[in-house]
Image (cartoon, rainbow, N blue to C red; front, side, top):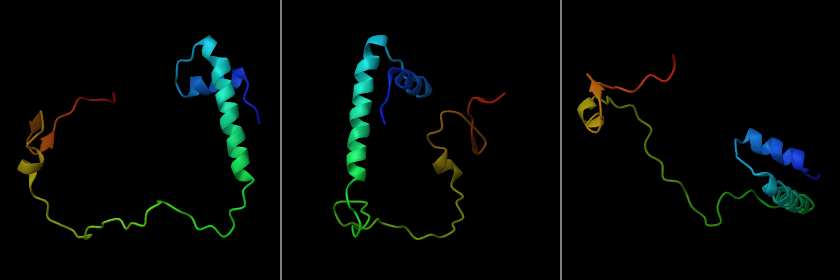
Length: 95
């Protein structure tokens, strides 16, 4: 699979990245090199290899999942720039 300049421009537009015309050829080369590397990886035999999420063995700390009464609005709202009663006041974003 090869990426041409039209595809680079399309990807850049979809990603909302401004790409100058003189950069398109260079980016196409980089994307083609990345895709070639990914194709090399697909040729590897990974049967028998366990999935790995970290190179060091670790266990995530978990907190007890319990329901609390909450009830600390003053503490929660102590840093609110603007508040109204027990609520944050934020600008309207949807008309």
